[in-house]
Image (cartoon, rainbow, N blue to C red; front, side):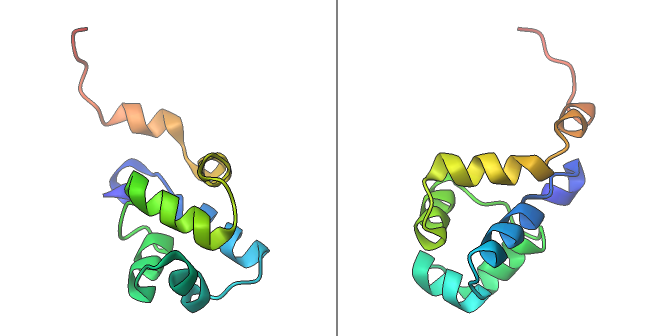
Length: 89
């Protein structure tokens, strides 16, 4: 789960949605996603798949790489690796 690694996808998604003036309902409709799922994404209760990022990008009227670039501003990348065990290459 996202909160376990301090990855806050939801903050970036919420910021993007509000920047274009859409409600969760409107983003969900335009993205062909359930409104409760969009809420779970924004509250970091669910992690989006790549397919979901594609759908959200359609609803946000952005390219997928732009959505990821904006969301990554809220991700603490150092914390991702703190919880991972060392592995041999």
